[in-house]
Length: 136
Image 1: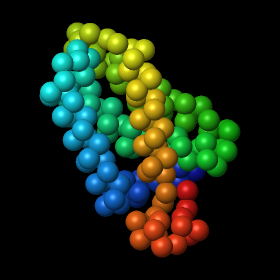
Image 2: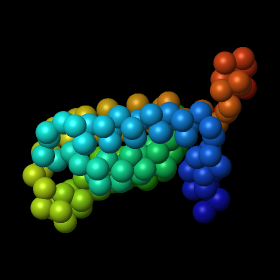
Image 3: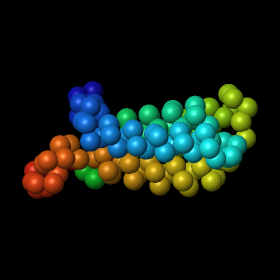
Image 4: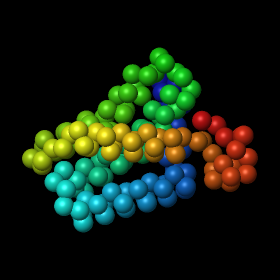
């Protein structure tokens, strides 16, 4: 359990720079849901997929970066849940159109991009001034 908490690093979820980038990403997702006429892009799925990605993608990336192969199934489960599991559960329950393949491509790229952006366990000051002190 302690290893799982160390990989999840819940204390990192409160870092101001991570919350700010999450807010920008969520604003972009919500803008798209409200302005673009894409049948499977709505506010509910944007919030759910965005929040789960914020919470789980750094852990999934951390597992890969540290080469913790024993934890690889957890990394892949987090990726699947954030990219496809939430998507399918939401749209099946809401009766929305489903564009699963297109979603999988776009959301996979965003999941791993976010995971590696939010991976560092450091303040922006440390990242900018002392990059060798960054923990992953």
